[in-house]
Amino acid sequence: MSEEEVQQQQAAVGGDVEAYGGWGDIESNEGSRRKKKKQKDKELALQITSLLDALFIILCFLLKSYSTSPVNVTQSNKLQLPKSSATLDPKDALPLVVDKAGITVDGEPVLAMKDGKIPEDMVDGHIIGDLVERLREKAEEKRKMAEMNSDLSFKGELIVVCDGDLPFAILRDILITAGDAEYGQFRFAVVKAAS
Image (cartoon, rainbow, N blue to C red):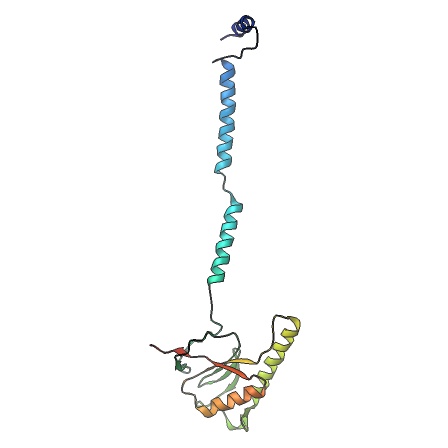
């Protein structure tokens, strides 16, 4: 439809008549097509914010549900844990490991044993000299940490990880020494016996 015809129709009707099926419709259709295409492009864009939110929630859930034991013991020829039917979960405390090779506190070697025995010159009564010094150092460290952080406190808790064949006399000396260094609460690491 030419522009003259449109003007004639407008004059005949006595008002504004829009072009119908002419060039104007094609131009307006192309404009709406472009808008629709831009909208589709926007809709297809990856919404990274909501994706990160979902990943963060999943990560928090997995970290919360993942539990670890505060006692991590690798058994060897020198260390075979005793078996027990105890069902208590271990608490986080200072680990004291006694095997046939020696005594370690918090992963640091304290005393070497010969043939599974503590050298006699290292024991005064029932107190093991090097062990009591190391335990007192650790107790002092825990107290200083508790002073800096009100959530922490020194409770004198000790996890004793010892070989099942350890003679009672050695275990007694170790526990007496720990008590002298203000570690009076003991827990023993054991392997759950088969039912």
